[in-house]
Image 1 (cartoon, rainbow, N blue to C red):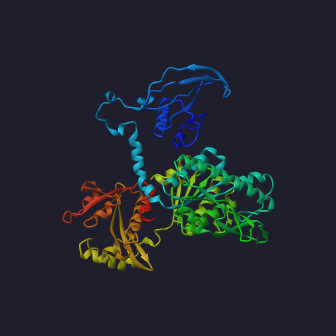
Image 2 (cartoon, rainbow, N blue to C red):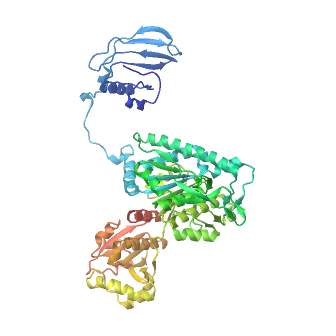
Length: 585
């Protein structure tokens, strides 16, 4: 027999292999337990039920094929084992019968509109919309930087760990880099911490504090992640959080007359060791303390460490979190700016006079020291830029608010700021000098009737509407963009040299022109095609009739040619960011 003595979570009854403790107070839970015990051939048990601050102990001999007999009850006091009285309870019915469905209690009917049924369609629509993101993020590598200040927001920190565990469950490979500057600053208190070039001069006393706080933060992350991984249903031995010396460090030494003592920078990332962890589905956790080959410990800038790890591993993305709920907004339109190119980030940093050294040195942040939101966000943008320059494809800057991570990764709307590498490098507005190259590129398609004829004189006359993709001064792609009334624009003459088509250059050119449409305020983009209809359909263009064209374009439509018309609505940059995810992993 198995004894059920006390209280723990009901779900643990699924692992009855030894005496366990269960808390349940519903008939359904009772029946489920009895059914499980029957399946596992458990013949006897005892159950403690609290009633009015006392316990009623039932000790039946259970066999679902026979009627329960000889049930005893002992009423106990608050002290375990203190028998107050003995009572006999009438024979109980076969509880297993309550698990059965009476065929007389069912009926068959036609379900009303599924979409109106308890709001379930909202979940279905959301889940369908997230499916592509889940598929595209699976098996990708992400580096998360966790700021020390996140631990002060207990609820947000707990939920963040749960969301990170969920991204792991959905197939992402994860490296966590934990900072502790916030905790160290609070510990040091009124003591003056020498700052130079954005670095703390780490003496022996400060190093001791950093060791203590880094250990505390590491434990808290491991604790919360372990809870979250178990909560999400991981199997035994699957999804461990592993920390260790996965990078080595070396000291800054003396710079400009300042001895940085135990402040160091990344010397080497143990790439193969981290990848080995990912082969066993483990999560790698790094603190800001690095060890040199001689055994010395150095305090490393955690953001610089995250950027270096992401670059060395060839991560698909790096994700920074801000302690404050700070975002970037347009002064002109007041809307949130959710998408930046690497060149945009560089221009913003240059405007504020801020620069980051890959080792961890910073310059110019003192100009915004009295503007905490700008200081924190510019700091994250700087290290996001450093990661992208080391080969990372995308950087995200998010707040700690609940669900921000999942919304950013698995929805089209996003939640924070995405910074991407300049995949449009080489694309520019065409010049008169490009006419010959454009004409050479499109002539083979004109000859077979795919494109209408565009003489060099017409190209030169309308050259401001053309854009070219160049490599070493060779025109390898081109496209035409014409703006019409009613917030509409037409993309035409989209051509890429055959040898470049397999590298996604056609998608790149189309995406660039679509972004130009948004910048011009055109949300309705259309194309006319006689041969490449399927290519545009695969990129979310929908076939429409001539009457959907702007009036001025309808008057110029060539009925004899009979081109099919495809239109696409573009609401925001984030939609285009999402489309890039499919072809630019």
